[in-house]
Image 1 (tube, rainbow, N blue to C red):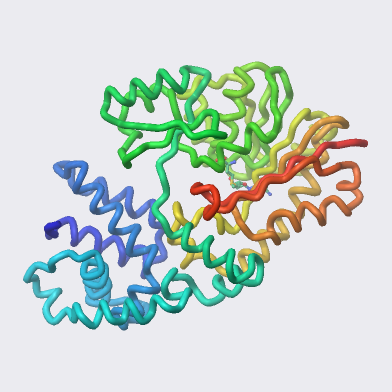
Image 2 (image 1 turned 120 degrees about the vertical axis):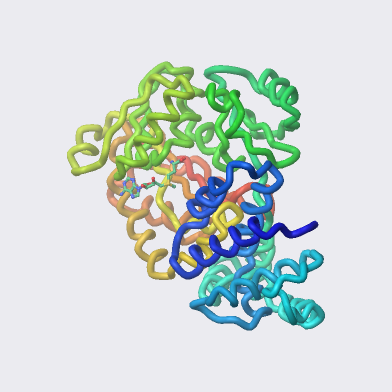
Amino acid sequence: MRLHRNLVFTVIDSLLAIFNEGEYADKVVARALKKDKRWGSSDRKFVAETIYEVVRWKRLYTEIAEVKEPFTRDDIWRIFAVWAVLRGITLPDWKYFENTPARKIKGRFDELSKTRKYRESIPDWMDELGVKELGEELWTKELAAQNQQAKVVLRVNTLKTTKEKLRAQLMDLEIETEFHDGYDDALILKERANVFMTDLFKEGLFEVQDGSSQLVAPFLDVKPGMRVVDACAGAGGKTLHIASIMENKGQIIAMDLYESKQKQLKLRARRNGAFNIEYRIIDSTKVIKKLHDKADRVLIDAPCSGLGVLKRNPDSKWKLQPEFIDQIKQTQREVLQDYSKMVKVGGKLVYATCSVLPSENQEQVNHFLTTETGKNFQLIKDHKVLASESGFDGFYMALMERIK
Ligand SMILES: C[S@@+](CC[C@H](N)C(=O)[O-])C[C@H]1O[C@@H](n2cnc3c(N)ncnc32)[C@H](O)[C@@H]1O
């Protein structure tokens, strides 16, 4: 691989913004990709993937490069040189790469790779938390799996097409996909491609949604004609899946705290041809109280640490703080208490997170079931998805029924 100056400069600027200015990697990458209209798909791929790679391996690379935060521009060049040497890329004779100690870099890589927190590149506190919650062996496997690049998974919008038809149409565009047992609406790309640019996407024939996330709507056991509340709908990944399972029959009430997310959901719903969604912003307790005992199904796709989706969001390794996890657990308790009251007797509730930590998952559910509100429910089943076992994101989902 030959390094091109303007692509590498874009990567360096982007890394400075992410590491020093605290900007989010996805936003920075989106901005970087708009920089030069002449870039072809392999240029764009280089920019996006290199930024994500360096963000993913930040701790390992900075230890090897012997640089410390806040980074200077020269430090970022040294980190980049580590990435290039470890990828086996021949460094061009640019001044930034003068005196790059390639052999020393490889030696330090071998040495540091003996220690998990460097090899897997995570902060000490996160490594300790993972071991405490999952045990040494499982955490080691899980972390390695969550450091792999995520697959691109499509969810076929069955309101508009079928899996077979869409697969054939994608094939015409030379995008090869495969089915996966147990994931009824999923098509998995054999090679990464920018599917958002296709007309098929613009026509609403599919959404991009990880395999584990696609398990949640079927787990909720929704049927056409039901009244379903998606209490933490966000931009609506799962709302849209629920809508397609319900064949646009019945009522979905999509809620969130934030209007900006709901706006995205509205756009997506229009594209998907999902017409049975009503929208509510949770700006007072009244919004919830009005629906007490009224829903056949309630989904609480709770805010969480995201320690199941590091593949997709490697910069959360650096942005997440232990205090945030404590706070979010409190929120999880509250939303379980408050939103479960919308389920009617005989109705069902799913509590889900994209975390692998038992303290955000089964322990929250077990605690809920001991409370006054929770005593009205019984656990039907739960499903703990580890990235190391499924190949998709780490997830948790529990199905409960309101019995009184
Ligand atoms: C895991 S995300 C939801 C993802 C979304 N369901 C999807 O499938 O695309 C959690 C959502 O909960 C929302 N949230 C946070 N605190 C909340 C609360 N107290 N009540 C309702 N929603 C909340 C966040 O804004 C966020 O959109």
